[in-house]
Image 1: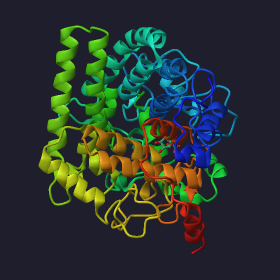
Image 2: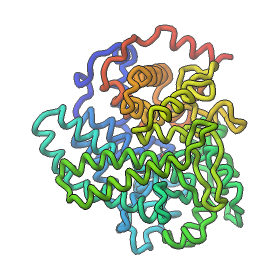
Image 3: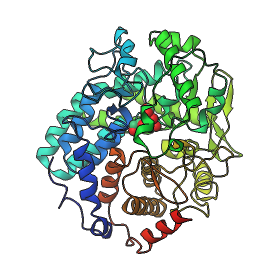
Length: 478
Ligand code: 9WN
């Protein structure tokens, strides 16, 4: 990888915290050559949506390495088009992550699975990949003709794989043709223990489970930062059922007790299909592909419209088994903003909620960044994973969506606040929203990656405020 120094404008944040060098260092240390560990100890494997965000950041350091990140992930794509949520690292230390490769070895017996090892899981994560590929292409454009030419080859290679991935989501994961992606497990949402899933999970009857280890708890400062044992029992029970179904999509669809339309994944898919259309243009894909992609975009928009809750001013997930929406205010509610191209009224409603005390306008926040679950929800918990903390990677998605929506000042504010948070507190996986304390993994690859992308995205208009660090220390001492 080339050195990060000199590639970025020497803005105030970089001078202050050496942020580029620190982010570069994290990505280098987590670099496995052709892919990147999501985190050094807590997550020693390749995760699907992490890799997409990581590639977005790497594109500012080394365009080829960014492309390789995604090529490696897609080399483990299933015959159905599915991109697995984890590709397991055969060199990961034993007893580092559970459930690991041996637990998912069953997936390798599916006729659709790629040859193992490395083993993969048979779940998925939100489809950020086409967005990442398009940003790599844009970075190549800035890097010059040679980079553009090799990246064009990359686009030609990855396009059919991206297309197959989106087709898989539009078919196997949406047999109803609703435009919305179905998930079989909270891990499939990327927002694992979010209260989004409490209603649907509560209806799952957990049977006998053998004892299992919680290796994750060795790698964080307090168990309150991770999902509870009750959550884990449910996760592992669902994995057991999926394994029992031989990872077969149709069987899962018929019998599985957790079947939910995930609005965040669905919105990301709409935005990713926009990116796929751009890529299709570059590689001169057949007209038939473009028609299909356009149809998926329209269907996705209609699906999200149907899940709009006018009272909350947010979108809600839908429990297919119960036949009802999952009514809780989380970050996923902003799905239409992420899907993009909303009507003026819908955009205004979403921005009003985003700025309100229910999210980024809450008066107690250390930085004006939206908590993963609204502090006004009874299930809000400021330290527990997706139940309250702020996540830089989610802030990146919102920032990118605000830029696309033409909400420039809001986007700049969100980017600046996020960078202030990271400059002050480090490259946490997530942050306590009131004190700013970093939680989870403290050297999280995607946090480093989005930092690089943010810094590369132009001036911040205002220097990092001097009092940032001291305010944070004070808040923590409270
Ligand atoms: C389960 C790697 C992943 C992220 C997810 C995040 C967390 C895994 C876990 O870590 O999930 O997939 O063990 O908790 O929720 O979004 O991709 O960073």
